[in-house]
Length: 557
Image (cartoon, rainbow, N blue to C red; front, side):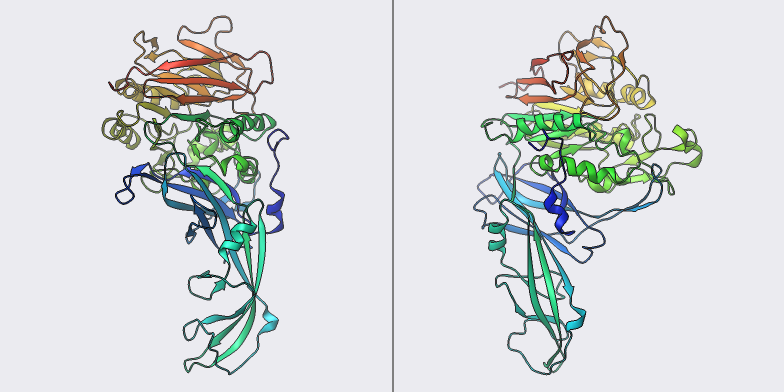
Protein backbone atom coordinates (compact mmCIF):
# COMPACT_ATOMS: atom_id res chain seq x y z
CA UNK A 1 0.00 0.00 0.00
CA UNK A 2 2.87 2.36 0.78
CA UNK A 3 4.29 2.13 -2.73
CA UNK A 4 0.93 1.83 -4.44
CA UNK A 5 0.05 5.25 -3.04
CA UNK A 6 3.27 6.88 -4.17
CA UNK A 7 5.20 6.69 -0.92
CA UNK A 8 5.38 9.13 1.99
CA UNK A 9 7.70 9.81 4.89
CA UNK A 10 6.95 7.92 8.09
CA UNK A 11 4.88 10.45 10.10
CA UNK A 12 6.00 8.99 13.43
CA UNK A 13 9.56 10.15 12.80
CA UNK A 14 8.47 13.79 12.76
CA UNK A 15 7.42 13.73 16.42
CA UNK A 16 10.96 13.42 17.74
CA UNK A 17 14.20 14.60 16.11
CA UNK A 18 16.11 11.67 17.62
CA UNK A 19 13.93 9.06 15.94
CA UNK A 20 16.29 7.16 13.59
CA UNK A 21 15.58 7.82 9.95
CA UNK A 22 16.74 6.57 6.54
CA UNK A 23 17.26 3.05 7.87
CA UNK A 24 18.80 0.59 5.44
CA UNK A 25 20.58 -2.75 5.55
CA UNK A 26 23.58 -4.32 3.85
CA UNK A 27 25.84 -7.31 4.23
CA UNK A 28 29.02 -6.53 6.11
CA UNK A 29 30.86 -9.79 5.45
CA UNK A 30 30.56 -13.15 3.73
CA UNK A 31 29.10 -16.23 5.36
CA UNK A 32 31.78 -18.14 7.28
CA UNK A 33 31.61 -21.38 9.19
CA UNK A 34 31.86 -20.85 12.92
CA UNK A 35 34.48 -22.76 14.89
CA UNK A 36 32.37 -22.66 18.05
CA UNK A 37 28.73 -23.22 17.04
CA UNK A 38 28.78 -26.70 15.53
CA UNK A 39 30.12 -25.38 12.26
CA UNK A 40 27.03 -23.29 11.48
CA UNK A 41 27.38 -20.44 8.98
CA UNK A 42 27.53 -16.95 10.45
CA UNK A 43 27.45 -13.51 8.89
CA UNK A 44 27.75 -9.86 9.93
CA UNK A 45 25.09 -7.39 8.76
CA UNK A 46 25.17 -3.59 8.81
CA UNK A 47 22.30 -1.35 9.94
CA UNK A 48 22.67 2.23 8.68
CA UNK A 49 20.58 5.24 9.73
CA UNK A 50 20.71 8.96 10.50
CA UNK A 51 19.97 11.15 13.52
CA UNK A 52 19.31 14.88 13.60
CA UNK A 53 22.65 16.71 13.58
CA UNK A 54 21.71 19.61 15.86
CA UNK A 55 19.22 18.03 18.25
CA UNK A 56 20.94 14.67 18.81
CA UNK A 57 24.60 15.58 19.06
CA UNK A 58 24.94 14.03 22.54
CA UNK A 59 22.67 11.05 21.95
CA UNK A 60 24.03 7.55 21.62
CA UNK A 61 21.99 4.93 19.77
CA UNK A 62 21.88 1.23 20.52
CA UNK A 63 20.68 -1.50 18.18
CA UNK A 64 18.92 -4.35 19.95
CA UNK A 65 18.68 -7.50 17.86
CA UNK A 66 18.25 -11.23 17.99
CA UNK A 67 17.10 -14.33 16.16
CA UNK A 68 14.93 -15.84 18.89
CA UNK A 69 12.27 -14.45 21.19
CA UNK A 70 12.04 -10.68 20.97
CA UNK A 71 13.07 -10.20 24.60
CA UNK A 72 16.17 -12.37 24.19
CA UNK A 73 18.92 -10.81 22.16
CA UNK A 74 21.99 -8.64 22.01
CA UNK A 75 22.83 -4.96 21.97
CA UNK A 76 25.42 -3.01 19.96
CA UNK A 77 26.05 0.61 20.82
CA UNK A 78 26.71 3.13 18.04
CA UNK A 79 29.83 4.82 19.36
CA UNK A 80 31.06 5.86 15.91
CA UNK A 81 29.26 8.42 13.81
CA UNK A 82 30.10 10.53 10.80
CA UNK A 83 28.86 13.72 9.25
CA UNK A 84 29.74 15.69 6.13
CA UNK A 85 29.53 19.25 4.91
CA UNK A 86 28.71 20.01 1.30
CA UNK A 87 28.61 23.15 -0.84
CA UNK A 88 25.95 22.57 -3.44
CA UNK A 89 26.57 23.43 -7.10
CA UNK A 90 22.88 22.80 -7.77
CA UNK A 91 21.02 24.96 -5.26
CA UNK A 92 23.87 26.98 -3.76
CA UNK A 93 24.55 27.40 -0.08
CA UNK A 94 26.14 25.18 2.54
CA UNK A 95 24.67 21.88 3.73
CA UNK A 96 25.38 20.08 7.00
CA UNK A 97 24.32 16.45 6.97
CA UNK A 98 22.72 14.65 9.87
CA UNK A 99 24.71 12.18 11.94
CA UNK A 100 25.19 8.95 9.98
CA UNK A 101 25.69 5.60 11.70
CA UNK A 102 26.73 2.23 10.30
CA UNK A 103 26.39 -0.35 13.08
CA UNK A 104 27.50 -3.94 12.50
CA UNK A 105 25.42 -6.80 13.94
CA UNK A 106 27.97 -9.60 14.32
CA UNK A 107 27.76 -13.39 14.24
CA UNK A 108 24.23 -13.83 12.92
CA UNK A 109 23.22 -17.31 11.86
CA UNK A 110 22.91 -17.52 8.09
CA UNK A 111 20.45 -19.47 6.01
CA UNK A 112 17.40 -17.18 5.78
CA UNK A 113 17.08 -16.90 9.55
CA UNK A 114 14.54 -14.26 10.51
CA UNK A 115 16.30 -11.57 12.51
CA UNK A 116 14.57 -8.85 14.51
CA UNK A 117 16.06 -5.50 15.45
CA UNK A 118 15.14 -2.07 16.68
CA UNK A 119 17.10 1.11 17.33
CA UNK A 120 16.94 2.86 20.69
CA UNK A 121 18.28 6.38 21.14
CA UNK A 122 18.78 7.93 24.58
CA UNK A 123 19.11 11.72 24.67
CA UNK A 124 19.55 13.61 27.91
CA UNK A 125 18.67 17.20 28.84
CA UNK A 126 19.30 18.98 32.16
CA UNK A 127 16.80 21.34 33.78
CA UNK A 128 18.98 24.39 34.42
CA UNK A 129 16.53 25.70 37.03
CA UNK A 130 16.64 22.56 39.17
CA UNK A 131 20.20 22.75 40.54
CA UNK A 132 20.29 22.64 44.36
CA UNK A 133 23.00 22.04 46.95
CA UNK A 134 23.02 19.31 49.61
CA UNK A 135 25.66 17.86 51.93
CA UNK A 136 24.16 14.46 52.70
CA UNK A 137 25.63 11.07 51.84
CA UNK A 138 23.57 8.59 49.86
CA UNK A 139 23.74 4.81 50.02
CA UNK A 140 22.28 4.70 46.51
CA UNK A 141 25.26 6.43 44.92
CA UNK A 142 26.53 4.28 42.03
CA UNK A 143 29.11 6.53 40.46
CA UNK A 144 32.75 7.17 41.20
CA UNK A 145 33.84 10.15 43.25
CA UNK A 146 33.70 13.42 41.39
CA UNK A 147 31.22 12.08 38.79
CA UNK A 148 27.51 12.65 38.31
CA UNK A 149 25.43 9.67 39.44
CA UNK A 150 21.76 8.70 39.24
CA UNK A 151 19.90 8.66 42.55
CA UNK A 152 16.23 8.42 41.58
CA UNK A 153 14.51 7.40 38.38
CA UNK A 154 11.04 6.53 37.17
CA UNK A 155 11.86 3.32 35.27
CA UNK A 156 13.67 0.46 36.96
CA UNK A 157 15.64 -2.10 34.99
CA UNK A 158 19.09 -2.92 33.70
CA UNK A 159 21.66 -0.13 33.89
CA UNK A 160 22.89 1.09 30.50
CA UNK A 161 26.00 3.24 30.39
CA UNK A 162 24.47 5.77 28.04
CA UNK A 163 27.18 8.37 27.64
CA UNK A 164 30.57 6.74 28.15
CA UNK A 165 30.53 6.69 31.94
CA UNK A 166 29.52 10.31 32.46
CA UNK A 167 26.29 9.25 34.13
CA UNK A 168 23.85 6.37 34.15
CA UNK A 169 20.44 6.14 32.52
CA UNK A 170 18.22 3.37 33.81
CA UNK A 171 15.90 1.80 31.23
CA UNK A 172 13.86 -1.36 31.02
CA UNK A 173 14.99 -2.89 27.74
CA UNK A 174 12.50 -5.76 27.66
CA UNK A 175 9.52 -3.50 28.28
CA UNK A 176 10.64 -1.11 25.58
CA UNK A 177 11.01 -3.94 23.10
CA UNK A 178 7.51 -5.18 23.85
CA UNK A 179 5.98 -1.70 23.73
CA UNK A 180 7.57 -0.83 20.37
CA UNK A 181 6.83 -3.98 18.42
CA UNK A 182 4.55 -2.40 15.85
CA UNK A 183 5.22 1.34 15.92
CA UNK A 184 7.84 3.90 16.93
CA UNK A 185 7.58 5.04 20.54
CA UNK A 186 9.09 7.60 22.92
CA UNK A 187 9.64 7.12 26.67
CA UNK A 188 10.62 9.92 29.03
CA UNK A 189 12.60 9.18 32.18
CA UNK A 190 13.05 11.80 34.91
CA UNK A 191 15.95 11.47 37.33
CA UNK A 192 18.01 13.29 39.93
CA UNK A 193 21.78 13.31 39.69
CA UNK A 194 24.19 14.23 42.50
CA UNK A 195 27.89 14.96 42.44
CA UNK A 196 30.04 13.58 45.29
CA UNK A 197 33.16 15.25 46.53
CA UNK A 198 36.36 13.40 47.45
CA UNK A 199 35.12 12.88 51.04
CA UNK A 200 32.02 11.07 49.86
CA UNK A 201 29.61 13.94 50.53
CA UNK A 202 27.02 14.46 47.79
CA UNK A 203 25.88 17.91 46.76
CA UNK A 204 24.88 19.95 43.70
CA UNK A 205 21.83 17.97 42.60
CA UNK A 206 20.31 18.51 39.16
CA UNK A 207 17.12 17.19 37.60
CA UNK A 208 17.63 15.47 34.27
CA UNK A 209 15.20 14.21 31.67
CA UNK A 210 16.29 11.27 29.54
CA UNK A 211 14.20 10.70 26.44
CA UNK A 212 14.39 7.22 25.01
CA UNK A 213 13.28 7.05 21.38
CA UNK A 214 12.74 3.55 20.01
CA UNK A 215 11.83 2.45 16.52
CA UNK A 216 9.30 -0.23 15.81
CA UNK A 217 10.77 -3.73 15.78
CA UNK A 218 11.83 -4.60 12.23
CA UNK A 219 12.85 -7.92 10.68
CA UNK A 220 15.00 -9.21 7.85
CA UNK A 221 16.24 -12.57 6.59
CA UNK A 222 19.94 -13.45 6.64
CA UNK A 223 21.44 -14.53 3.29
CA UNK A 224 20.89 -18.07 1.99
CA UNK A 225 23.60 -20.63 2.68
CA UNK A 226 26.06 -21.74 0.02
CA UNK A 227 24.22 -24.15 -2.23
CA UNK A 228 20.74 -22.84 -1.39
CA UNK A 229 18.53 -21.32 -4.12
CA UNK A 230 19.16 -17.58 -4.38
CA UNK A 231 16.99 -14.73 -5.72
CA UNK A 232 18.29 -11.20 -6.41
CA UNK A 233 16.59 -7.99 -7.58
CA UNK A 234 18.75 -6.25 -10.22
CA UNK A 235 18.04 -2.58 -10.85
CA UNK A 236 19.61 0.65 -12.04
CA UNK A 237 18.87 4.37 -12.36
CA UNK A 238 16.15 4.26 -9.74
CA UNK A 239 15.34 7.87 -8.85
CA UNK A 240 12.38 9.00 -6.77
CA UNK A 241 9.38 9.33 -9.04
CA UNK A 242 5.98 7.68 -9.18
CA UNK A 243 7.54 5.19 -11.58
CA UNK A 244 10.21 4.49 -8.95
CA UNK A 245 7.52 3.60 -6.42
CA UNK A 246 5.89 1.18 -8.85
CA UNK A 247 9.20 -0.60 -9.32
CA UNK A 248 9.70 -0.67 -5.54
CA UNK A 249 6.23 -2.12 -5.11
CA UNK A 250 7.07 -5.07 -7.34
CA UNK A 251 10.35 -5.71 -5.51
CA UNK A 252 8.54 -5.37 -2.18
CA UNK A 253 5.96 -7.87 -3.35
CA UNK A 254 8.56 -10.38 -4.55
CA UNK A 255 10.76 -10.03 -1.47
CA UNK A 256 8.51 -9.43 1.52
CA UNK A 257 5.02 -10.67 0.66
CA UNK A 258 4.09 -13.23 3.36
CA UNK A 259 2.48 -15.41 0.68
CA UNK A 260 5.92 -16.11 -0.81
CA UNK A 261 6.95 -19.13 1.20
CA UNK A 262 9.87 -20.25 -0.94
CA UNK A 263 12.93 -18.45 -2.29
CA UNK A 264 11.96 -14.77 -1.85
CA UNK A 265 14.34 -12.06 -3.06
CA UNK A 266 17.03 -11.72 -0.40
CA UNK A 267 19.07 -8.81 -1.79
CA UNK A 268 18.71 -5.79 -4.08
CA UNK A 269 21.66 -4.77 -6.27
CA UNK A 270 21.57 -1.30 -7.84
CA UNK A 271 24.02 -0.65 -10.69
CA UNK A 272 24.36 3.07 -9.92
CA UNK A 273 22.28 6.27 -10.04
CA UNK A 274 20.14 5.96 -6.94
CA UNK A 275 18.73 9.29 -5.74
CA UNK A 276 19.36 11.55 -8.75
CA UNK A 277 20.32 14.26 -6.27
CA UNK A 278 22.67 15.84 -8.83
CA UNK A 279 24.21 18.19 -6.30
CA UNK A 280 21.01 18.94 -4.37
CA UNK A 281 21.82 17.43 -0.94
CA UNK A 282 18.19 17.45 0.22
CA UNK A 283 17.29 14.86 -2.40
CA UNK A 284 19.28 12.13 -0.64
CA UNK A 285 17.15 12.28 2.55
CA UNK A 286 13.97 12.38 0.46
CA UNK A 287 15.16 9.31 -1.49
CA UNK A 288 15.79 7.40 1.72
CA UNK A 289 12.38 8.47 3.03
CA UNK A 290 10.85 6.92 -0.06
CA UNK A 291 12.92 3.75 0.02
CA UNK A 292 13.06 3.02 3.76
CA UNK A 293 9.98 0.75 4.02
CA UNK A 294 11.79 -1.64 1.67
CA UNK A 295 15.43 -1.05 2.59
CA UNK A 296 14.99 -1.55 6.35
CA UNK A 297 13.93 -5.13 5.56
CA UNK A 298 15.83 -5.99 2.36
CA UNK A 299 19.63 -5.51 2.12
CA UNK A 300 20.75 -3.06 -0.56
CA UNK A 301 24.11 -3.10 -2.34
CA UNK A 302 24.99 -0.25 -4.68
CA UNK A 303 27.51 0.79 -7.30
CA UNK A 304 28.72 4.25 -8.26
CA UNK A 305 26.95 5.92 -11.18
CA UNK A 306 27.56 9.31 -12.75
CA UNK A 307 24.78 10.82 -10.61
CA UNK A 308 26.78 9.92 -7.48
CA UNK A 309 29.85 12.02 -8.47
CA UNK A 310 28.38 15.28 -7.07
CA UNK A 311 31.52 17.37 -6.68
CA UNK A 312 31.60 20.01 -3.96
CA UNK A 313 31.17 23.52 -5.31
CA UNK A 314 34.08 24.88 -3.25
CA UNK A 315 36.53 22.02 -2.70
CA UNK A 316 35.78 20.05 -5.90
CA UNK A 317 35.77 16.85 -3.79
CA UNK A 318 33.80 13.96 -5.32
CA UNK A 319 31.50 11.13 -4.19
CA UNK A 320 31.06 12.76 -0.77
CA UNK A 321 27.45 11.78 -0.18
CA UNK A 322 27.72 8.33 -1.77
CA UNK A 323 30.63 7.46 0.50
CA UNK A 324 28.97 8.65 3.68
CA UNK A 325 25.47 7.27 3.27
CA UNK A 326 26.44 3.72 2.28
CA UNK A 327 28.69 1.08 3.83
CA UNK A 328 29.30 -1.81 1.45
CA UNK A 329 30.70 -5.24 2.42
CA UNK A 330 34.33 -6.34 2.56
CA UNK A 331 35.67 -2.82 2.05
CA UNK A 332 39.39 -2.70 1.46
CA UNK A 333 39.69 0.61 3.28
CA UNK A 334 38.42 4.21 3.28
CA UNK A 335 37.84 5.85 -0.07
CA UNK A 336 40.80 7.54 -1.72
CA UNK A 337 39.76 10.46 -3.89
CA UNK A 338 41.31 13.60 -5.32
CA UNK A 339 39.42 16.80 -6.13
CA UNK A 340 38.97 17.51 -9.80
CA UNK A 341 40.85 20.49 -11.20
CA UNK A 342 39.22 23.79 -12.09
CA UNK A 343 40.45 23.44 -15.67
CA UNK A 344 38.70 20.10 -16.01
CA UNK A 345 35.59 21.43 -14.34
CA UNK A 346 35.30 24.18 -16.95
CA UNK A 347 34.95 21.52 -19.66
CA UNK A 348 31.82 20.04 -18.03
CA UNK A 349 28.17 21.00 -18.38
CA UNK A 350 28.10 24.69 -17.44
CA UNK A 351 30.99 23.97 -15.07
CA UNK A 352 28.78 21.65 -13.01
CA UNK A 353 30.32 18.25 -12.21
CA UNK A 354 27.33 16.93 -10.27
CA UNK A 355 26.58 14.20 -12.80
CA UNK A 356 28.68 14.22 -15.95
CA UNK A 357 28.26 11.15 -18.12
CA UNK A 358 31.91 11.40 -19.15
CA UNK A 359 34.17 11.87 -16.14
CA UNK A 360 37.88 11.62 -15.42
CA UNK A 361 38.83 11.64 -11.75
CA UNK A 362 40.55 9.69 -8.98
CA UNK A 363 38.41 7.34 -6.89
CA UNK A 364 39.53 4.06 -5.30
CA UNK A 365 38.50 1.78 -2.42
CA UNK A 366 35.60 2.68 -0.11
CA UNK A 367 32.37 1.88 -1.94
CA UNK A 368 34.04 2.15 -5.36
CA UNK A 369 34.68 -1.56 -5.89
CA UNK A 370 34.03 -4.53 -3.63
CA UNK A 371 33.12 -8.21 -3.70
CA UNK A 372 30.82 -10.47 -1.69
CA UNK A 373 29.13 -13.87 -1.71
CA UNK A 374 25.39 -14.40 -1.43
CA UNK A 375 24.04 -17.92 -1.56
CA UNK A 376 24.87 -19.44 -4.95
CA UNK A 377 26.14 -16.14 -6.33
CA UNK A 378 29.49 -14.35 -6.14
CA UNK A 379 28.97 -10.63 -6.84
CA UNK A 380 31.75 -8.23 -7.86
CA UNK A 381 30.88 -4.52 -8.05
CA UNK A 382 33.18 -2.29 -10.13
CA UNK A 383 33.39 1.47 -10.58
CA UNK A 384 33.07 2.95 -14.06
CA UNK A 385 34.31 6.24 -12.58
CA UNK A 386 37.62 4.95 -11.25
CA UNK A 387 40.70 4.12 -13.30
CA UNK A 388 39.94 0.90 -15.18
CA UNK A 389 43.01 0.65 -17.39
CA UNK A 390 45.33 -2.37 -17.35
CA UNK A 391 47.55 -2.16 -14.27
CA UNK A 392 45.36 0.30 -12.38
CA UNK A 393 44.48 -0.32 -8.73
CA UNK A 394 40.97 -1.44 -9.64
CA UNK A 395 42.17 -3.66 -12.50
CA UNK A 396 44.69 -5.46 -10.31
CA UNK A 397 42.13 -5.93 -7.55
CA UNK A 398 39.55 -7.26 -10.03
CA UNK A 399 41.99 -9.74 -11.55
CA UNK A 400 42.98 -10.93 -8.07
CA UNK A 401 39.32 -11.45 -7.10
CA UNK A 402 38.71 -13.51 -10.23
CA UNK A 403 41.86 -15.61 -10.06
CA UNK A 404 42.37 -16.07 -6.31
CA UNK A 405 39.18 -15.31 -4.37
CA UNK A 406 36.31 -16.50 -6.57
CA UNK A 407 35.61 -20.20 -5.99
CA UNK A 408 33.02 -21.67 -8.33
CA UNK A 409 32.72 -24.79 -6.19
CA UNK A 410 31.17 -22.58 -3.47
CA UNK A 411 29.43 -19.93 -5.60
CA UNK A 412 28.88 -21.37 -9.11
CA UNK A 413 27.29 -18.19 -10.51
CA UNK A 414 29.54 -15.15 -11.12
CA UNK A 415 27.85 -11.75 -11.49
CA UNK A 416 29.74 -8.50 -12.18
CA UNK A 417 28.07 -5.09 -11.94
CA UNK A 418 29.19 -1.68 -13.20
CA UNK A 419 27.28 1.40 -14.32
CA UNK A 420 28.28 1.99 -17.95
CA UNK A 421 27.36 -0.90 -20.29
CA UNK A 422 29.93 -2.40 -22.65
CA UNK A 423 27.24 -2.97 -25.27
CA UNK A 424 24.15 -0.92 -26.04
CA UNK A 425 21.36 -0.93 -28.60
CA UNK A 426 20.09 2.48 -27.46
CA UNK A 427 20.85 6.07 -28.43
CA UNK A 428 22.08 8.28 -25.60
CA UNK A 429 25.36 7.11 -24.09
CA UNK A 430 27.24 5.86 -27.11
CA UNK A 431 31.05 5.67 -27.10
CA UNK A 432 31.54 7.41 -23.76
CA UNK A 433 35.13 7.29 -22.59
CA UNK A 434 34.41 5.31 -19.41
CA UNK A 435 32.63 2.48 -21.20
CA UNK A 436 35.13 2.36 -24.08
CA UNK A 437 38.18 2.30 -21.78
CA UNK A 438 36.69 -0.20 -19.35
CA UNK A 439 35.55 -2.55 -22.13
CA UNK A 440 38.97 -2.51 -23.77
CA UNK A 441 40.81 -3.44 -20.59
CA UNK A 442 38.34 -5.58 -18.65
CA UNK A 443 36.28 -7.49 -21.21
CA UNK A 444 39.16 -10.00 -21.61
CA UNK A 445 38.93 -10.72 -17.87
CA UNK A 446 35.16 -11.25 -18.04
CA UNK A 447 35.60 -13.71 -20.90
CA UNK A 448 38.65 -15.48 -19.45
CA UNK A 449 37.13 -16.17 -16.03
CA UNK A 450 33.65 -17.08 -17.22
CA UNK A 451 31.50 -14.26 -15.89
CA UNK A 452 27.90 -15.44 -16.22
CA UNK A 453 26.14 -12.07 -16.10
CA UNK A 454 27.36 -8.46 -16.43
CA UNK A 455 24.78 -6.01 -15.02
CA UNK A 456 24.74 -2.29 -15.88
CA UNK A 457 22.45 0.75 -15.87
CA UNK A 458 23.05 4.18 -17.45
CA UNK A 459 20.79 3.51 -20.45
CA UNK A 460 17.24 4.03 -19.20
CA UNK A 461 15.90 0.85 -20.71
CA UNK A 462 16.12 -2.94 -20.58
CA UNK A 463 18.39 -5.13 -22.70
CA UNK A 464 19.61 -8.71 -22.56
CA UNK A 465 22.30 -9.85 -24.94
CA UNK A 466 23.16 -13.32 -26.12
CA UNK A 467 26.40 -14.87 -24.87
CA UNK A 468 28.85 -12.32 -26.20
CA UNK A 469 32.62 -11.89 -26.62
CA UNK A 470 34.30 -8.98 -28.39
CA UNK A 471 31.15 -8.02 -30.28
CA UNK A 472 30.35 -11.49 -31.58
CA UNK A 473 27.84 -14.08 -30.40
CA UNK A 474 29.55 -17.01 -28.68
CA UNK A 475 27.85 -20.19 -29.94
CA UNK A 476 29.28 -22.17 -27.01
CA UNK A 477 27.46 -19.94 -24.49
CA UNK A 478 30.57 -19.66 -22.34
CA UNK A 479 30.96 -15.88 -22.68
CA UNK A 480 29.08 -13.30 -20.55
CA UNK A 481 25.49 -12.24 -21.04
CA UNK A 482 25.17 -8.45 -20.71
CA UNK A 483 22.09 -7.10 -18.92
CA UNK A 484 21.03 -3.44 -18.90
CA UNK A 485 18.47 -2.58 -16.18
CA UNK A 486 18.60 1.24 -16.14
CA UNK A 487 14.80 1.58 -16.22
CA UNK A 488 14.21 1.76 -12.47
CA UNK A 489 12.02 4.87 -12.75
CA UNK A 490 14.25 7.97 -12.83
CA UNK A 491 13.02 11.44 -13.77
CA UNK A 492 15.00 11.60 -17.03
CA UNK A 493 12.55 9.16 -18.65
CA UNK A 494 13.46 6.38 -21.08
CA UNK A 495 16.20 6.18 -23.68
CA UNK A 496 14.87 8.19 -26.58
CA UNK A 497 15.41 5.69 -29.40
CA UNK A 498 17.16 2.57 -30.63
CA UNK A 499 20.29 2.84 -32.73
CA UNK A 500 18.47 0.68 -35.23
CA UNK A 501 14.70 1.02 -34.87
CA UNK A 502 13.66 -1.77 -37.22
CA UNK A 503 16.19 -4.53 -36.62
CA UNK A 504 18.13 -5.02 -33.39
CA UNK A 505 21.79 -5.96 -33.52
CA UNK A 506 22.39 -9.70 -34.01
CA UNK A 507 23.75 -10.03 -30.48
CA UNK A 508 20.60 -8.59 -28.86
CA UNK A 509 18.26 -11.19 -27.36
CA UNK A 510 15.62 -8.79 -25.95
CA UNK A 511 15.28 -5.02 -25.63
CA UNK A 512 12.65 -2.65 -24.21
CA UNK A 513 12.76 1.15 -23.97
CA UNK A 514 9.08 1.64 -23.08
CA UNK A 515 8.64 0.09 -19.64
CA UNK A 516 10.10 0.65 -16.18
CA UNK A 517 10.91 -2.34 -14.03
CA UNK A 518 13.64 -4.53 -12.57
CA UNK A 519 15.49 -7.75 -13.34
CA UNK A 520 14.72 -10.84 -11.26
CA UNK A 521 17.62 -13.32 -11.14
CA UNK A 522 16.89 -16.67 -9.56
CA UNK A 523 19.69 -19.24 -9.25
CA UNK A 524 17.85 -22.50 -8.65
CA UNK A 525 21.03 -24.54 -8.32
CA UNK A 526 24.59 -24.66 -9.64
CA UNK A 527 23.53 -25.40 -13.20
CA UNK A 528 20.33 -23.47 -13.90
CA UNK A 529 19.03 -19.94 -13.24
CA UNK A 530 16.01 -17.97 -14.38
CA UNK A 531 16.27 -14.37 -15.55
CA UNK A 532 13.05 -12.36 -15.75
CA UNK A 533 12.23 -8.77 -16.70
CA UNK A 534 9.54 -7.63 -14.24
CA UNK A 535 7.71 -4.75 -15.89
CA UNK A 536 5.70 -2.06 -14.13
CA UNK A 537 2.87 -2.57 -16.62
CA UNK A 538 2.34 1.10 -17.48
CA UNK A 539 2.19 0.52 -21.23
CA UNK A 540 1.31 -2.24 -23.68
CA UNK A 541 4.48 -1.53 -25.69
CA UNK A 542 6.84 -3.34 -23.32
CA UNK A 543 8.16 -6.83 -23.96
CA UNK A 544 8.02 -10.05 -21.98
CA UNK A 545 11.35 -11.67 -21.18
CA UNK A 546 11.68 -14.83 -19.13
CA UNK A 547 14.56 -17.15 -19.89
CA UNK A 548 16.27 -20.08 -18.20
CA UNK A 549 20.08 -19.95 -18.31
CA UNK A 550 22.34 -22.95 -18.19
CA UNK A 551 25.66 -22.45 -16.44
CA UNK A 552 28.38 -23.66 -18.82
CA UNK A 553 31.00 -23.25 -16.09
CA UNK A 554 29.20 -25.21 -13.37
CA UNK A 555 31.57 -27.56 -11.55
CA UNK A 556 31.10 -31.24 -12.29
CA UNK A 557 28.88 -32.92 -9.70
